[in-house]
Length: 197
Image (cartoon, rainbow, N blue to C red; front, side, top):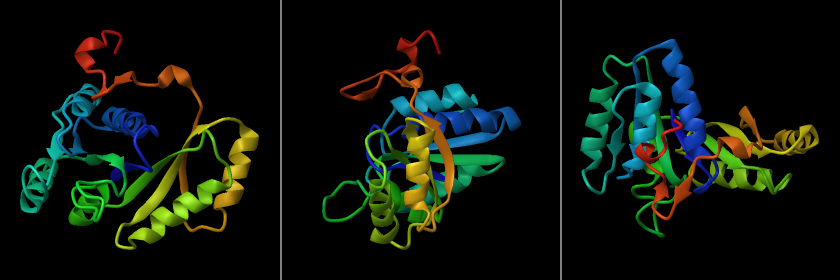
């Protein structure tokens, strides 16, 4: 499965790390991947799984390499998760989704779990998910995680809004500043600089 975000900063890495940690409690054979050349997020993945994370970058390598790397590194793994980059359709060009999370999901024929930051919206979540689902029907949207939900009433508004859309809500995370990962201009702060991990 691919964990994607509607954009950067929505909690994609937090959701990925929570899933990796939960899966690692079930099996020592959890394999993670990261779309693009990012080297910091993979450090967090390795911290959660105890195994190296591999980058899937069709620009620095090739589509064939990405497919081979994924297939080879999944051998012997009980679970595999791919963390996306930026927003689902954000890649190397504004004219196409080449090198995007959507590109990699299609290339590997994997379903997508979309993380949406709901902190400042309610019914507009419907427009967001409708757009993400319909932009490229080849991308299999398996479900959504509603992140930064403020209250039971807020969740009710979001759930009501999404009731007409055939996209299951697979997770809900309440707004909790305590679980935010520190970041700076190049992305997350590396694990070596976070002794409290």
